[in-house]
Picture 1: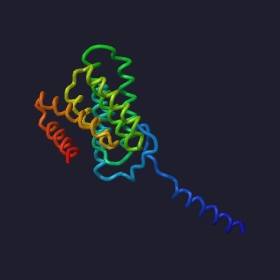
Picture 2 (picture 1 turned 30 degrees about the vertical axis):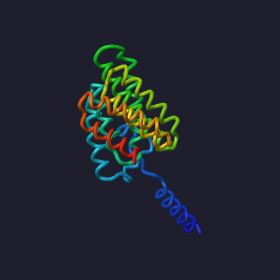
Picture 3 (picture 1 turned 45 degrees about the horizontal axis):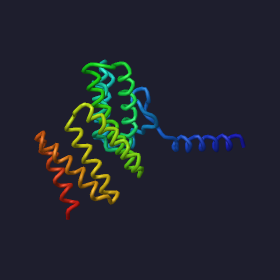
Picture 4 (picture 1 turned 90 degrees about the vertical axis):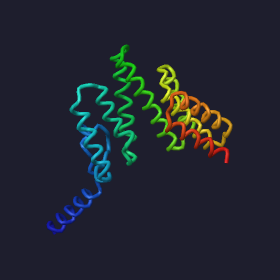
Length: 202
């Protein structure tokens, strides 16, 4: 009889072990609940390369750029965890660098991370919060006079307004983006803005 109960306990332990997730080491991978087995080979390579740079760098800007590689290129939805982690690092670094060239680079990174967080909220269907984050990002780009960033955000805002059915607002922001793109000679942004304008005029 004891052998029977022992057998049942072993079976329960095996089945429970099969159900539990095998999470990646947070100390190295930086975020909670990351399941490496769910990632594609491309995402694994991207993570490995980016985190190798992150952990070997002493410069905070290099660390932020390494995380940016993940935030901009990772296909799995867990990129959002890295985005929030990167955002926190940028904010902490800004507390330590209140002036100078490093602060300007950090502010540019902050604007990009805020834009990406807007995208995350948009994917969750939280359009009001998405729009709020786009305008926060726009405000920083305007302070920095970063015209590429301003043009990109105008396109994002236009795209969001189009999805909300506010075609006149969408058209206005696409035109603003196009104007800046022409001014700075950014052919890719010119093409994107013209395409967006064409889509709403069909």
